[in-house]
Image (cartoon, rainbow, N blue to C red; front, side, top):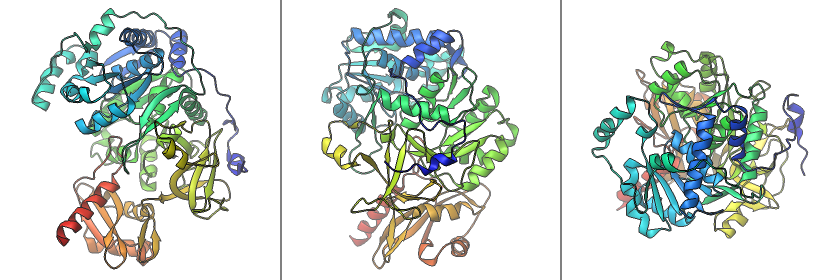
Length: 562
């Protein structure tokens, strides 16, 4: 056990250790229903569900799954954007004893088939517009039943009547599914199924609540096995970190997709645990997000840097009241300092950077929200969490200030990878989970990520960390978004390239950016190439896909050589 020097920095309101309730995740919804049955649990595009309605709907879904033969430990896939059905299905699957498999609605047939086959899911809940995609892959998987729903199913009148026409115009086709055979309509389930509680025994430590697939930036995506304990632990830690929040009085903006573990923990579970309201948006649209904050007055807004950047660069941001926001925990990518300061100035709330991985449910570190924080740091480990920096090769612990691989221990760390015992074993060393991130710890226990191990650029023998170069570029007044990558170079092995999205109405030349970087970086870190783009490739949660850009460069080089 290492000395947890960071605990000396904890404010007195945050406990060093949290006693975890030994219960399944869905118990949070049962408790919220028992205490606040008539309180609004979900707001979606003008439609609202109380905790009583949410609880009973989840039980209806659970009983229907049982009637389809779903037993304890069976996998149920949910392929939806953020909407009431996604919340109902998440808790309903757990009430039925099933394991939730969150699935990205943007997946192609190939990606969907891989995930369904790998997870062995028996049931898939899918948006009507994606039904044809599900049908094409069904024979190649263990899927036995498909449940179909639509955005219109939970829209208020008259939006529910208008939406099908908007959808047909947007996609060029509409889908009609009959409730028969292996096809099931969500609306029919809600009308016909029983809200009777189901009595099942759960092993808090061992039973899986979730199979969460990693992004698959290297090789095929892996199913991360997260237990009820993992998810409860991380949500309780998050609640302790936000010690100024009040049970029953918080409203959480749910833009982060639930099929990303970060959105799932900080919105889907935390809101219910706090007995608060989740305000859902099916996708991130800047204008819609600003209007929603202005009207619905959310108090907590977990997000990704690209979301905060998008809001700040909207020309009409001054027309909206964002002062309801008390706290934001930013994750999934490094938070530029400039963005943090601007967002806090405009909202009057606090925006801090957190850190974690799918394998850690996801958060392990964060800066204090209402206490000492250090700019550029990912903060300190959360309660019940231990962290260390290990040297590459021999895994020796490193002293403060030295860069190595960050490793963590805690009740939020995954059970392992689904059906991949060898890869699970390779991810741990002596009980420590190896994050794959390079960083260091200072004398006070604050941690700093310098980069992903695989993203580090080695140019002419020098180690260059993209994040350091990106921080400098974000300081330039014309830069809205940027990402730095190492691209093949015949002389240096790799060289530094920056991909830039400019702010509207701003312009800058390569020469000007080069001059700016040379004033702030050692010469070997300065980008040798700049490329201006209208947008950067991103995941659904807003994480910039550096690997996609590197692959593009390799393809260009191969074509040139050919």
